[in-house]
Length: 241
Length: 229
Image 1 (cartoon, chains in turn blue, red):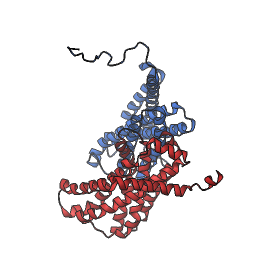
Image 2 (cartoon, each protein chain N blue to C red):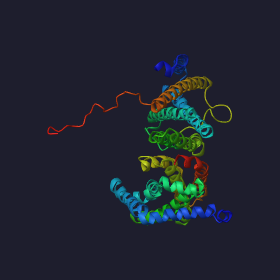
Image 3 (cartoon, chains in turn red, orange):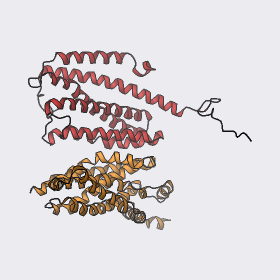
């Protein structure tokens, strides 16, 4: 089962890329002000970018489902949202760990932090909506509509550091002009982004295949002669009857 | 037949009639204004018991608490039980040729009226309990309807998404509240800007933009949501 879900070549590629990313993160020069603490960036930033990518894939798949009405798009949308929620949670947790020594608090009411938390809860709502809807077609339709609406949060999160001046630093790479980051650090960051992207693809593929298996199980007819759950329980017989 | 078709009410009339139907149902049930509004007032009353009765602090946080209560309890108004159409009602509306967007627009219009009434009922309670600085009050006639519209449309969208599901109210609230965060930010910042003598147009524009975006989203998604109802 695990071989069907995870395959082989992509898994190896993910392992190699993550190892290379980890080694590069350890070898990259430390930050002049924050020292080794800054190395958290090599996971924090790729996790945040992958969250954006995941939700963009959910958006694209939702639009594709509304257009084509094929269940595979629904599976991809759901899988990508799940992985996106994981990466968003990871980015928030790492940001909090990074924030404690640098800002002095685990949590701050910084616009980037707050909008990211809002995005996290919006997509938790998306997953809750899916879980609550039992009919597969209704589930696909409703979540596709919400998957489109929910994506509004992503540009808000990205632009929050531009619109409001606060503690979180403004964009250093995804901005017009030369990135304002040391080029060795940038190369290491991009290597980790690549590794996380491969990890995302692996998780997406595994979750999509799992969803297909779940659907097959849901629609499979009950085998003839197969005992139903609870059939061993008999009605009580009264002694006098 | 042609005459009958030509005499059919237009979309605006249909929308108004549907909104009136919703309001009449609410008048009979009294769920929004006789149950949810007092519940919101109780929430405003409980906060000082939890954070302490420091009058200057309460005066400062009062407006913000008011808008948070409007958001959290306003969602319950939008997702009230009397705003649930059963399958037979939906079938009749379909047979009558009512477009899904018109049906949802009627619901949103009724929600707007109820939410505005809800805001107006809670405002004096907040003023009495928290004694906030009211120097920004001239903006309220513009701000209250704008927030009511945004929350009403979002509530309508969430109600349609969670239609017929177990835990509809809880799920709908989870869908609405995070998305409605810009409404709270816009509302509180409008009052703050007015209090400090700044022009709050940018914040009003934010609320208006949210209103327009969610209205467009509701219009575009109406047919899809009708199919899953």
